[in-house]
Image (tube, rainbow, N blue to C red; front, side):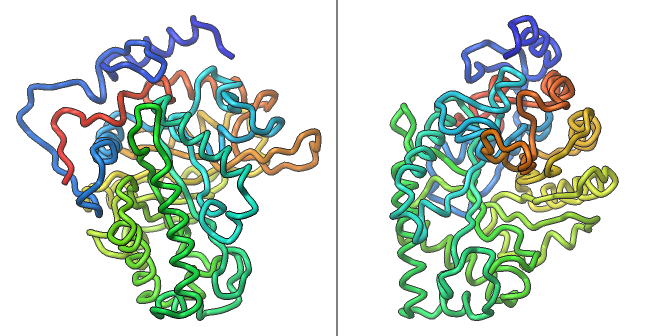
Length: 398
């Protein structure tokens, strides 16, 4: 863990950025939520007109924070790390820089599909991590590697082109099964409450990387019409039938090579059905591709008046000692993108031959460079955040 001098250096570097209490209670200087006397009010709209006040506030803050910099996030950061599992309060990120990531990412699949019955212990850990993240003031986002409801395979089972059509056939066996999975997810969402007793908002990104062919909802298994219908059916069922009002719905195509603005509209479900524009960008260390795609997603964000972010990225087993300053901070700077979330560090115990990690951990050669990223004035970690669940001045969400 870093010492207090390094924390203070961080505070000095972000002078002029924040004017709120951090999640640790340290008073910050001016910034993202500072109350200006500007009469201009920015209005945003969610797919859920009945979203909770905290969900609306989070949405507004996602828009506002990308004007100042970007939040750092890490998948499953609170649940396990490369050398540890289920240690409350532990984090690979915190082990290195002394602070938690601003964004906690996880997967909702085992909380909803046919794995739920056998995943009670793991799901209890997930729920603990969600609540701890919220109580700290972190932002929470969730993907959904849901199993194939037709074949019984996993989400990577793309052996049939009839999955989505079967889901959409009202009353069919697959339709009933899928609704049951959505019922499970809705139940979990209703149980996600912080210490304040309020429902915890989550950026939910179902059917992610739909531009690829690896999944049963991907481009090789569905038509454009089927994917859009599946998206709308899922959101409508959760929102209107089950009364889930603490989700922000994010679309997140995979953009590993250079893409255009138009590529982000591939199978776009409609402006009133999408809240957040994400991208999963595994571009390696190709900064030109990353910068190109960051510019494109930022343009989509501006055009659609919706916040955006890099919902997954990283290089598996990376060794570069300057990865964080060269391949993350430099491309992200000045791009008006709210977050960059690295994929997980698999728990491997003592198995050093398993290189499935995408972020820093104690002992990785990029440790000192990661601290440099942490100390940048436009990189936001947990302690840098304003109150993400209170509506900032000059914003309204309908």
